[in-house]
Image (cartoon, rainbow, N blue to C red; front, side, top):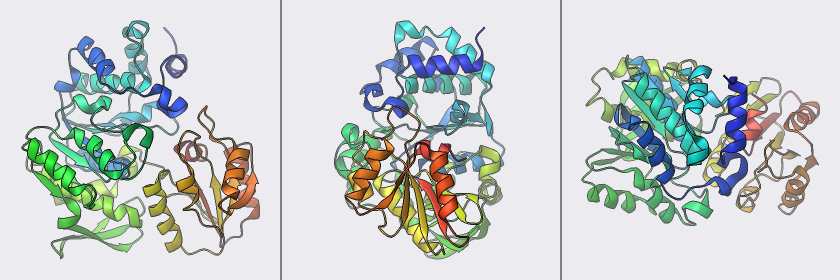
Length: 424
């Protein structure tokens, strides 16, 4: 029998993986995942689920909702992507990563050569099968890229969640917010309630229309709930302008962008509590207090050093970067040092145009085929008056930033999930 390392190497090498090679791995239909689930006798029909789509916030919402469900006493599956360090981060039950032996067994039992699935199709089928075999009470399932044609879209969930819409993966999902919203709205199922995270003028009517077509109720969480920040780890939930739950503790930073996510999470928890009666105020409090501990959540405004304060964040599209820059501006510091790397198959100009000219940059290349060469990145960034040097690795870029930064400066590491993975 092969080792886990050998199986993962085979999967990375043999199966088209979007995170590594980009568009060549994208499948604009559901035929591959349908073939796999047919062989597996429809595992996605053997467990209850929550389905989460959106451009930003999916990770925060899925992990926190999973923590709340666990705190309520439910055996909870969690399927997310991409992973940062270990492939098994993608598939968890009650926070525990899928055992290596289960990955080996599944890979060995599926005739990959005959089906030729993509990496994401294979991984989704593995998650569905594992959750079914382990008889989870409920699984929180995050879409990969879109919605309508996403491999996860074979499930009929108890609740559909759409966090927000921003420009990302425009070569596949469309070049306008309206077009992207149409794709994300594809997860809305007949009679299944919908929690929409943000009311956006370009997308609100699209979601309402799709919900009406599917006879599904829809709630826009930001219309009903607000989150009031107390400090970095405490907040209040307001409902219709009045405090609903006071002084909730959380083990992740209460950043400006998490305020929106927390409102979506609370709305989702309230909707789910109608069917899952053990979800109550105490479960919500306990879930928020132990997101990292119970789910392994990482990479969102994560502190990796104190002096100088060093923060890593996986925000990498236009909407995510805008929110992260707001958080940087709200964080006390003297000078800003940015360790920055990007993938090369996206329109990076919109992102570079957002970045502050006053920062010192340390350009690097994420270690994957899609990674944008650090010298090309530096040259392109100079067109936007961003100043800095190029480094052959993320680690060397961070070391240079540490040498240059004073104790009251801020070092920010970002631009790509793969850059952040190198420093965690």
